[in-house]
Image (cartoon, rainbow, N blue to C red):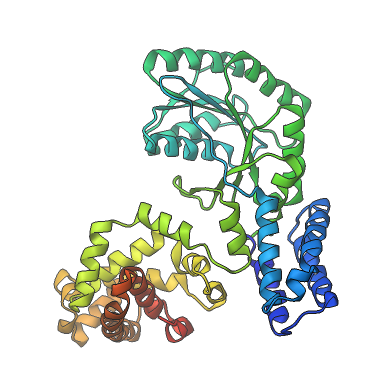
Length: 460
């Protein structure tokens, strides 16, 4: 996941600070020097890092910190606040024009940044907000670009406008506006052509579209995995075409993530959204304070709650809590919980978003084991799933064969399930009063069945 290495380094630096008790000015400067190196290794822009450390140091060596009862916590607080400031402080969203006006949004960026997929993801968000969205295929160069947009649009229930045989993006854009007006669309998203690198023809084409139709927002899509190049691309697009904001894609990937920390400071343009997965629903609003919290190991419980509200059926959650209290939990229930966990991004993702639990991300969590558990449960009959007590050796042998696993693994899952069931009943009574029984139960249960060391070390 993005920032994982940076997050680990920063947490180690602050752990050492906490161990010192009262801090000297030299302690603070030495720690900030390590922070500087960690940020540079994460591919954060050098000028941005230099200013960041200067701002932190001016505040951190002041009398307020030196005389504080918890100087290390004060330093961490300052670093957190400066990180938030670097990324834009307050979240900024695309504000759609009041109806019946049409809001025009032009997506720009290099080829491979995920622009076409992001256009569809953005359209889906606006559709969920009650708008009628039209995706416009203005990429006439990349093979299958139009088809990709059409396929994504169909999956999300979005209309796509294209002109077969037309190689003029400006003409396509103009005619799409006429079509939108006649058919009641109030948001138009233009998917423009990217290139493998920036060139003058590309910039001129984008400027021609902007001068020919009403564009309210020019949104740059950049790939977080390109590191420092993403910042250079953002600066060039900002200078040549003019952009209003940025969407960063692949922020969930194995990347140093420095682009997200640098782009706002370099361009002065806000980050609207972050692509956090390959699903067409994986587009999250960008909150600088939440991102800073995740980087510093403070978690991001608000984003987890919002994602849970979107993905988890509230009535099902209440029914599950009732069943937990009465010890009626069975394998069908567990399968449902496991699938909801996957919707939220898996156990590793969730642990990284819970305050104080970020260190657990590095525990040996075998996500593939969950797939094997699912195969075992699906190989059971309805009666076996609802009443595990009927599982005798011959039934277990059949289940093992049907799931492609060993009978010892089936025995282990059944044994752990019974232990987890008892634990969850006790925990639901203790946590239910605070309204956390459902999530705690889901985490505890899945931790117990995820296999290996995770099951023994998970602290729920």
